[in-house]
Image (cartoon, rainbow, N blue to C red; front, side, top):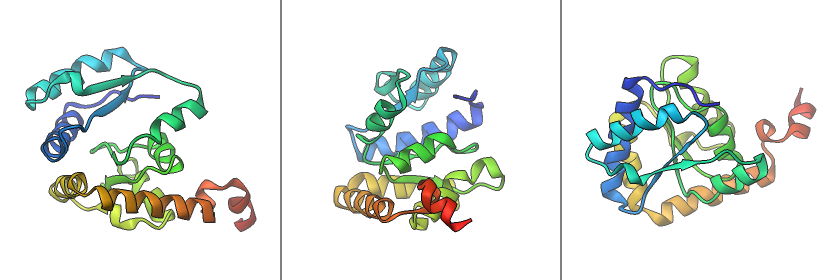
Length: 173
């Protein structure tokens, strides 16, 4: 489920997305339409950051398999700052989409970092917003780098990662 976003979260994420927008003009930001009341604040934050709110894509709820297939079309995920992704982070990784995250101080801001470490991609975990933005921009310019991250993630998932394989997880208990 979607959680209400604080203005700090919206501002931090909009700033990071605005930075990457200049790197990749065809980048878009997808968001679940689970709670329509969240659309106006995000559209307003995009507008305030100088971005066209039409570049926000409101994704309707889908059955799980269709949702994962839709996520798999992305070539990079940018985690939410302040309170990071949880289920969405797991879904992105499960769909083979690399995710850039910033590990925060609280549990809610470290879930994606744990998932990325579990799949052997700790280099996608950064320590601060400035590094998050610069790394997102760098990846935005580097199609081969994004493809390599995606291939590495998918190879690791196919080889078996206990966090994403119930049978391996149970065996390791």
